[in-house]
Length: 365
Image 1 (cartoon, one colour):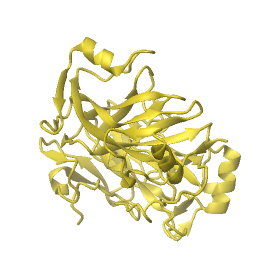
Image 2 (tube, one colour; image 1 turned 90 degrees about the vertical axis):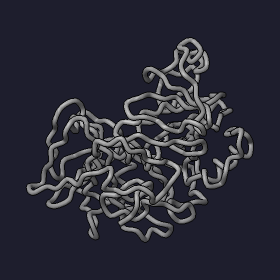
Image 3 (cartoon, rainbow, N blue to C red; image 1 turned 60 degrees about the horizontal axis):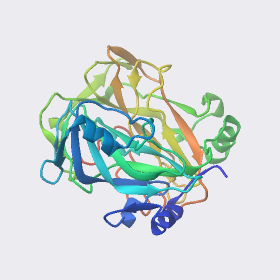
């Protein structure tokens, strides 16, 4: 069966030591269809991002490169423009039919903190091959802001799957009709307005007035262990539009919002593509994973939630117009309904976001 495993199955994997850790895995790490991964104390400052060769462990690479090792509890400062490798607390002993994907958490992406998962002997980012046994590592690159990162902080999440759970176009059309996956404001979208191509195309909302936030050039630190702590104005400028368009400037990072409201029913999960060059010269998202119940609620009583987009232009200036396609949302089948629903029992900073929403590290106004 092609499926993404849900909370009760993830808990079973933890109980059976398929997902294990030196420090006990906590219930709060288990999400509806994913598990949060925690930083350990073991960190390395490396020269560049990399992937290991087939059969090569990360420890072998680190020994050969003679990189600087340090402890996050004593040196939590991660500086923008530098590249770090941090070992995670969790490690895996997968069965032959189990594999996994990793995504940065929403709060990570919203501060332009580039996080990639790497594993021993596998030359693909953010993927864990079938039957993998071994440690997990994160490559961390602060791009817009310096950060303070401590052990126990979660910057990424893992979802375990069997087979190929992605919905095809026929299944997407059925789900769109049955579960009203997309809405505009308080009104439901017309089916003929939805573009489906191995996922649902989403567009950017740029009307008039405040339409985006742009990163400031600053050397201040964002403390990843503190919520509702930092002043938005110290890290972000407001971007306004008078004509339904804005220019994306290279070297800056933007928070924008989709025009559509997105709903993820309890039997589905979803992922946003990070880069699609057919949409424009930019990266449109960092986090990209949506648990069952996002924009849907415990009883299906939420009429969708707009997606905050994490946009970085590629090399040159690019004009972005209102209603322009900006990303594609790929839906996946879960094995069953999870015993946790996004926001209902897990708590969430983004359950009812109505537009541009900052990461949890910033004060709400």
